[in-house]
Amino acid sequence: MKRSGILRPCLLKGGMLCFMCLLLLFPSSALTGAKNGLLLWSGQVLPSLLPFLIISALFLSSGLSDVVAHRLAPLLSPVFCCSPSGCYAIVIGLLAGLPVGAKTIASLIESGKITKEEGQYLLPLCNNPSPLFILGYVSVSVLDAPNLRYPLLLIITLSSVFAAILLRPRRTASAHVTQKPDNSPKIRFSFSFLLIDAAIEQAFSVLVRVGGYIILFSVLGNLLTLLPLSPVFLACLGSFLEITTGSAAISALSLPPGILISLICGFVAFGGLSTAAQTKSVLAGTNLPFAHYLLTKLVAGILAALSSFLFLSVTA
Image 1 (cartoon, rainbow, N blue to C red):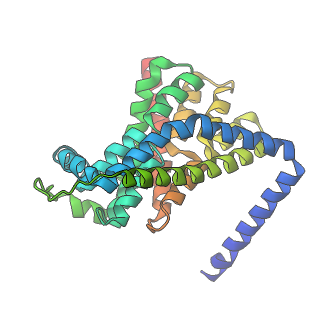
Image 2 (cartoon, one colour; image 1 turned 45 degrees about the vertical axis):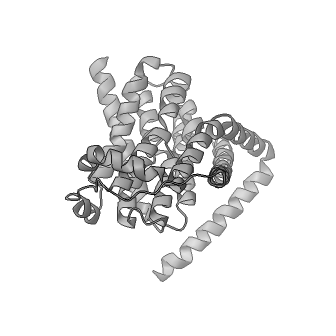
Image 3 (cartoon, rainbow, N blue to C red; image 1 turned 180 degrees about the vertical axis):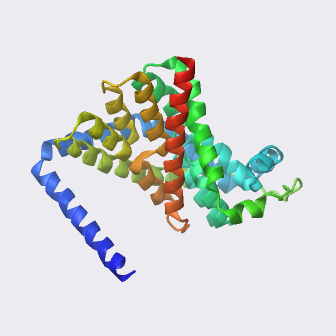
């Protein structure tokens, strides 16, 4: 314990110093990476996530999330073995994607509507790339395969669901497997423009942090391309760091279509370290075990890669 407690700060300090040296030695590559990250954030992430973040925050603060949760509970609670508020997190997470799912879970834990154990189970299930990202960017812009849009969306989403259920903490499963939703809760709904103001401020606070992580990882990924390594390894390493630019790099490789699509599906289901850092940021204060989230997303990535390869082999 003492050795690991000393080693970790040393590694972090060494990594930050190396990163600073790379910025000074290769300023043009760092600048290109920062520009690419900023364009990605302003052109895709900001317009796609901002409305969902505002609406989700407004739902939670006004009490409307409780209304939605208890309407969905009879349908979703038996399937996912979760509380009514957990049902709301599942729906908003699957529709809006990351980090909206993680932010919703953090808000539900802080308000006491779900337990920490349930949040640990729901986090990898709800916090995935959005359907718009998979249907539009991955399937059309990167792969140029609009006919595969919905199969890939289904494969990536179900892989995350299966991984979350497979690695679900036992305490959470036993706590909710017999739970019956309360169909007559006392729900209070309130609305004011102050709630809208607070929701907008909260949404931009999350997006600014997300943008910072995207730019940092974009700079790091661009600097790594200077290494004398094979294009395949560099593309996979870039996808492991950041899935948007990494997916585009993989699609440019001279690989069989089945392997190429499977690699992209696997990394998209995993999410990359950039999205993991964004998720960790919005979870601040919840003390959720982050190692469990990373392990579950890794399993989801493996399942997505294998499932997509099998699907393409059968339908070829």
